Figure 1: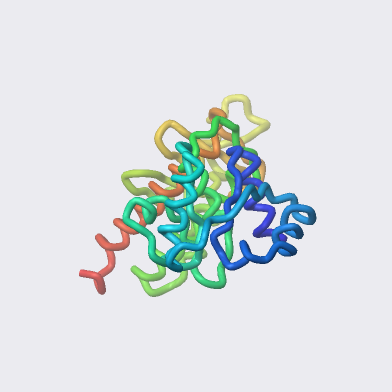
Figure 2: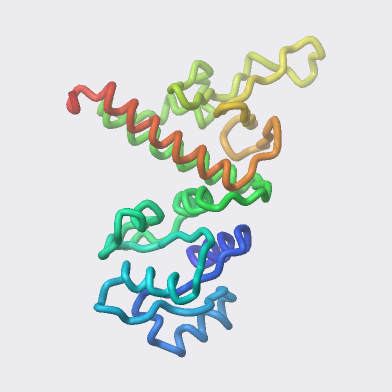
Length: 238
């Protein structure tokens, strides 16, 4: 149910429809169930063509004269062409469609819908998770006590050439002191600043509205910068 709701959210935000490419396309009862029970906007299925999913997708696009944006969601790479791989949201076997995949999927659709706090938190937590992985690989020890996304006091935080994140600053702001300096942003990416109370996800606020599309771009850029940081600082890699 959680995974299906994320798919429904993706379709609702972007106006996208679903074309089945899996074996479920041959099961009319399953398709009926997905539409009636879960409300998925399924409009059709790809044809059978040489048991090649990539060619079947191209055939559907050609026959429908479809010129819009599209993505492919799959847990396998199948027989996709280079151009199709550029539009593939690869979930990995057994993982299903997660908030991280939703953010990546949204980066293909230039929607102007403003994101809510829940979605912003999901994107930040995806970045946090990869930061913890990277720091463990570099130092061979947990980064939990220094994690700037949490209430650890690590105000100096962590910074790459793409983003920076700082823990909540207990000494920098006092709500009862009118002369106290304003709480500094906890997360910065380009001109976007995100502030929270104590830990990421609590009392969130942004300096401006941010769209789902922007957050998808942000997530991809931040994860790429973490990969670069890992390569530069991991002795084992060097």
